[in-house]
Amino acid sequence: MAKISMVVRNEKKKKSPIQYRRRCSICGRSRGHLRKFGVCRLCFRKLACAGELPGVTKSSW
Image (tube, rainbow, N blue to C red; front, side):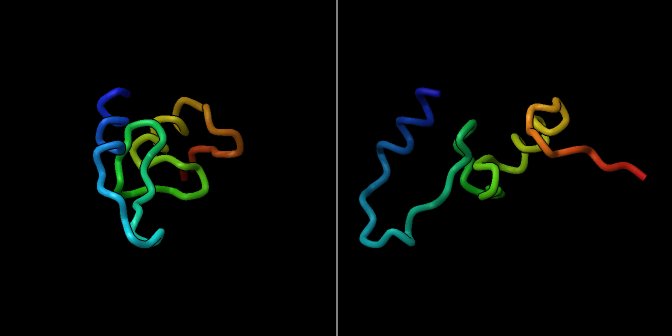
């Protein structure tokens, strides 16, 4: 967790708010971010399989 905060802290100031990237609140990953849940696709899958996200169920057919 300390490593993530150092990465975010060391980023240079951006001129425009659009230049900031959304990051996963758990691991800090910048790509594959799901805005609705605030996590990346990898953490989303882990949390969904563990049943820790309310309203999300695994589909199978």
